[in-house]
Length: 442
Image 1 (cartoon, rainbow, N blue to C red):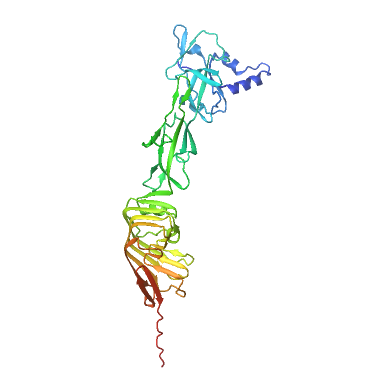
Image 2 (image 1 turned 60 degrees about the vertical axis):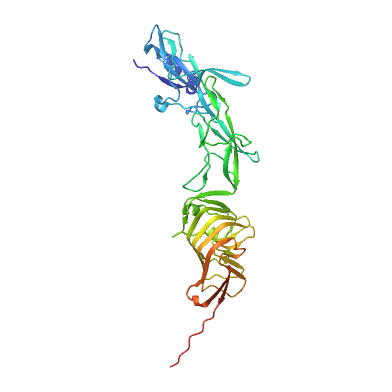
């Protein structure tokens, strides 16, 4: 004969008891259970937590007279409150800041600490009850207590300053590892996953000790703590990680789109491939801005770049507006780059160059080459003043750290109206007034 189950929410029962006690002839739910021989009850105590029904107690009651027996006893296979076999009536216990270690028959308090014993194994344990025993639905034959363990923690410290950066809480029964930050070949940026970020810095490495002698060399940080199922308590529940950082926001670049998506004046870039800008637009933020970051070319080439200067309000322009004192470019070749000073540009207090409008004195350029560079000056530019500086490589600053070849030419509707003279890096431009056409008369 199939076992009959009946799950009853105790809070509901107690409310019914209170209401029905004053009603003449009415019976409370416990009386109704007893009347139907559902006399053996098992109580589940959420023990500080709540079930999904927003109650802290649920009760299962059984009619043991209908269960198979041996020697006058029957064996009850209990179901956990969240057992899927309960269907939509399953009761999932929750307790904010804790995870469930299991259900226990014993719960005692000693020196302010809760101790558990008798962890119930729902798959193998059975409860023995006498078929002819004197039981009452209102008096559970067994109470199972939820044993809650505080969520495990990973504390992240700045290894240099010792500051606590963040604390990650997690349930070790669901997650037993966290992913260590790694470079993404899709975005070019570092994926931090569950690690904290530090503004203005990029993750460099993590250690299990503050001295930096025990590095995290794996793809994951494994759960270093454990749960003592015998007592329902956590062991080594806090893991400390010490993080090293490198200054600046760094990117590993494998294609043009990654560079465009991450272009900023403060960024630092490590190239892992040649970059072809055919049909691509060079970052405007670099063209006019003050670049303070770095590019490590690793022997690669940036080629087929077409930069057009049209903004009259900017004082520096080139592939970079200005390479500041902290800017650094190394081991990189620029090939087939064209920079055009375009129509409408007023050359007053401005600096123009194919690589940069200005290269600051302390900017670091190491093994930087330009191959097939072309500086173009549009014939419609305004040359009414002389307060401007044009250079093949840079308008202002030392171009000596850059090797290669850059040529300069006039373009536009009337290139013959420009007289261009190049001396080293310096470019001089003069407007050549064209003679008016002879008037003819009839």
